[in-house]
Image 1 (tube, rainbow, N blue to C red):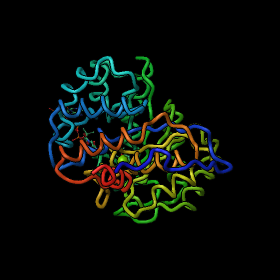
Image 2 (cartoon, protein in one colour):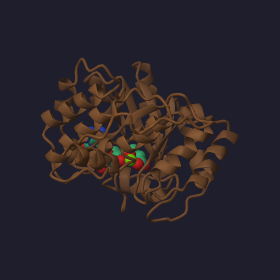
Image 3 (cartoon, helix red, strand yellow):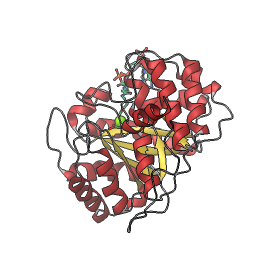
Image 4 (cartoon, protein in one colour):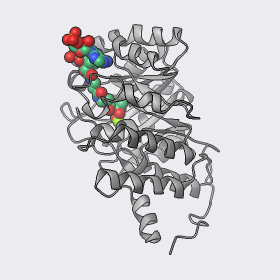
Length: 314
Ligand code: HMG
Ligand code: MG
């Protein structure tokens, strides 16, 4: 028997936004870490279904070196299959070569991805933090000249698998650089899922003191230690209204030890629906998409909500 769609019941709570924009990262952050190489037609169908479920921003792929992320080496084949999609389809670009490839295929939204720590900058981009920022400067400028909007990711904001604790001031400094360079939005990455809600509030408050308001920020929580939803609620209470999530909880990062999937979009939407916060997403339709994708990947979805809803349907 299917769960009645009057659940979850709606009870607004004070101090939360009326609407949240979900930045769906499943096709990029999710699939980049899957052992199975997903055929390009399945990726295009996945993105089409996510958009039909109401997601308005779906990170589609990355224009990185194909040897570094073989799972996304088909970016050139994927983009033409997405033509006419009624959604923003951002793509990751690490350097000028990546930007050229993305713009040649009509990308309108791009993202650069910095690290707050030296160890991850080296592991992920083969450079120091400063060299990474130097590499991004012309990328952001050229993207903006071409009329693209640029998001800046910051990885390891809450802890690093090699270095351990990460001072909040390190994140503030990289955030300032990325904004000054011309990034329109910053996404605060908890790459290995070690943040807790008080830590989130501490970072948001330090950023605000440095003149970086919540409206410029998105949060990007991996769910390794089961804290992603609690951390998201803390960020919403602080005024953040853009949340990254991955359909079915797919994800991880191939260059970060112990990174697992992102906050599952369905778990997020269950909570936001219950709070009466608008997302435009049809939860049941989205969960059906993740169940469909899980069959392609040959393993059950890690999302509790997807598993619970699909059990009820069986
Ligand atoms: P490198 O080895 O330093 O590259 O890697 P290079 O600049 O020395 O160039 C070497 C060769 O690669 C050259 O070719 C370039 O043309 C070529 P050659 O002249 O030898 O024939 N090349 C490229 N080819 C295709 N596309 C490109 C490109 N760039 C150079 N864009 C590089 C530097 C940036 C390429 C490499 O480190 C890389 O691709 N890294 C990507 C890593 C990645 O994608 N990680 C996952 C995404 S980040 C993430 O998941 C975290 C996030 O979710 C937030 C969070 O959770 O924290 C965003
Ligand atoms: Mg990530």
